[in-house]
Image (cartoon, rainbow, N blue to C red; front, side, top):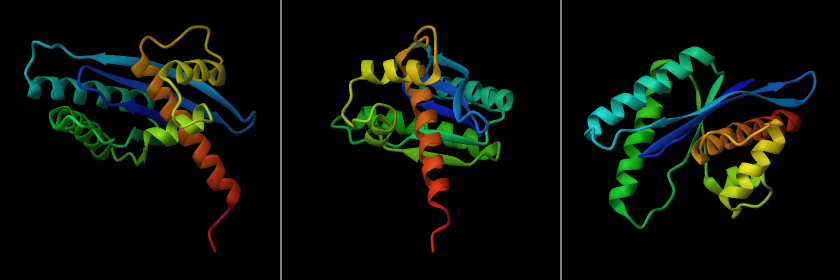
Length: 167
């Protein structure tokens, strides 16, 4: 199974691609990167840029599924609205390319990767590097978070498969 993880952000949107090798039961790092947005562009231009980049990554890597972080509670309504717009663009890119989407809460992602739902970003980055056997950190915390989304989905999918069909 190939998973594309997307860590939505209003300035930086991270993406990562991870394969699950069923023969070796190992996770394989395929790609990771960061879409950096130009602060001088208006919102519609930024959203169009994110859409174009995500669409290109989906077409390039042909994931089986796309994992996206769920909206979390925010005290700042304006920030939450902007983040929701970016998530909407990511969901639209997936839908237009007919890719299923799995959404995970931040606590679930950290629990799956670190074993502790309130883990710090540094702990998540460290475990992403260990689990994927990376020589160096991804180019941004956003790319590391996107890879963590991939790992979370693959771990959840393995658990569900091991449980078998629901009776």
